[in-house]
Image (cartoon, rainbow, N blue to C red; front, side, top):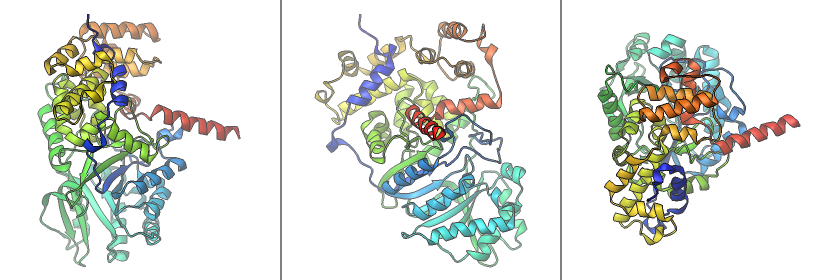
Length: 527
């Protein structure tokens, strides 16, 4: 009887990732200016209830690098940016970046990039004198640069932030820019809000005579690297000072969205997500379009050092600043056919292929409404990843990008599957007993909380599993845990800690990097 390779998918995924290579002359290279988004920290004092990071300020386990950049991590970040032909660097909130103010100033001084956008709640501006000093220090850092750049301070202003921190901090920041930096073309203040939010009206009320220009749709915030936003307009002050205002779509972020709930408008969630991919990301979140129509890579750098092009993170093949050089990261992105195919063929190609066998994975990745995690979510199930990789290889064979001779080093059973008709591959996928349950059973260490979280997501319809597979999972759980359960409802949870674990299961630090940082910590403790 022929072996079903989907019964042990991780083995064949690793075979594909390590052995399948597209020849250099067939490989597309995206050499335009790159874009990068970085989170210096996970921690935030505002703790907005709607924030998809659910950031907080509590203590965490060691090593600390799991939650924010260490000095070593920051230095490796600078090295990465300075090697990447960067045209647009965004220091994001999701953790408040100003909790790492020294890193902000050093980035302004040292990063080789054409544009630095610093995204913040602005809560650090509550005291007018402190506000003036901090903005002055940023400008001083800008003046110390040898290579020109533009620095943009972008304030996230919406009803949630205002309800937490008030609005005086925003007024203080605006006053500093109006009074001291209005004539500095390379140092700019911007505001950013959400559709349907009236917070900007409060700014206009505070400054008599302030008006707004006509709103434009799907426009970039600069002319060189096309960073498209939903809407953009400007506030005009009577003294001729202007502030650009961007408006983003509200994403209904929820890692625990109930896909079985008939009251949830899944069609609306999907439409919003797909429109963002079409119009804001040019159908490919891993690439950024340059003004000259060249394309460059678009990177997402997590607070724990994980790095991938947007939407391209593979949880069983992570890259990390602490363990991987710039050259290795770029090589891994291009030589891994799973990640390369997203660069080459785009977001909708990947969703179409995965929908052939696992439409629920596509639905889940969109319905959680978190662009940062969508790639990790859609590629979470190993047997689905294997199917996708096989289908990509089949398409590249048909396009003469790959040849069968170049695949001769693969195992016979994998090569036979690749040579099969698509409907045959799909049939083998459908006949496997493998599921997310089996995937968790294969983990070398049993973690009770991981299983509880998985059962919660299965209950809310996130995975295709049979009744028999669920029963098998419950038996496995009962055998290894401290408690006995009879059904999924027995472990339903809605705590803050539970949601933080759901974030962690899609964003965990590369294990080798975590181990390295922990070893470094223990060495310092021993001194």
